[in-house]
Amino acid sequence: MNARRIRAVFRRHWYVIRHSPDEVFDILYWAFLDLLLWGLLATFLQRRQIDLPVPVGLLLGGALLWALLWRTQMGISTAFLHEVWSRNLISLLASPIRPGEYIAGAILWTIAQLAVGWTAMAVVAWTLFRFGIFSLGPALVPCLAVIMIFGVAMSLAVLGLIVRFGHRANVLAWGIGGMLMPLSAVYYPVTVLPGWAQAVAQGLPLARVFEAMREVIAGGPVPWDRLGMALALDLAYLVAAAMFARAMFATLRRRGYVTRYV
Image 1 (cartoon, helix red, strand yellow):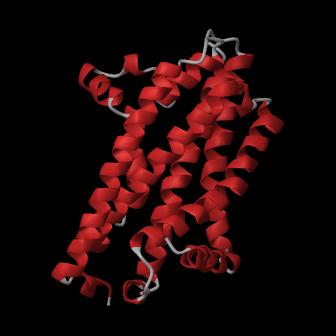
Image 2 (cartoon, rainbow, N blue to C red; image 1 turned 60 degrees about the horizontal axis):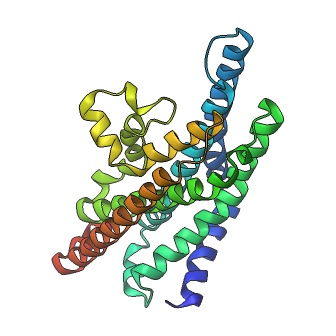
């Protein structure tokens, strides 16, 4: 890994966003919209005294953690798509930079975006709805880690598919999260899913994290066993996604698919 090349990728995307207010709008708008919608709904339920366990915490906690996953996956995926849209992929492949260095730079850039955007969401959640994400206590760090690692794995899978199938797969950068959301039990327990869907959800680290979040917010102990299994699944998905992306990049070079981006 060459630190200068990683910093160069970071600076490349920093220069883009400095002169693209639409990019800033896209980063902040959808996440804040979800937060406001779920926060207002939770407030309505609370004022009507509907018998739900800690509705504000459950819904806003789910919204915040899902926004973290979505922004992690989108940040890395769109960083690569910028190279495609600007017809810079040929130059990138011809440069000395390695795929791992580019991904590291994209991850660093995504973390910088999250440090601003997601922190602002957490502040808004506390200011408007008096919900603090730190109410998760010691479970907060493993929850955030599992969410972000899985977001990286999702983005690597998307990159591999885009490299293999071209522009037709671009929509997955926005759609893959929506495909997994119903099975991730973001706002409801896994038990409400059909039997086959529950089996699939058990294989997703996301469902385990959101179940753990609800348990902690409801006043229960931190389910370390559930979070540990989620982390183990995370690492397995990350390794598999990295191997898949690497294989697709090798196929791109070997079969000449790079001509799609000329």
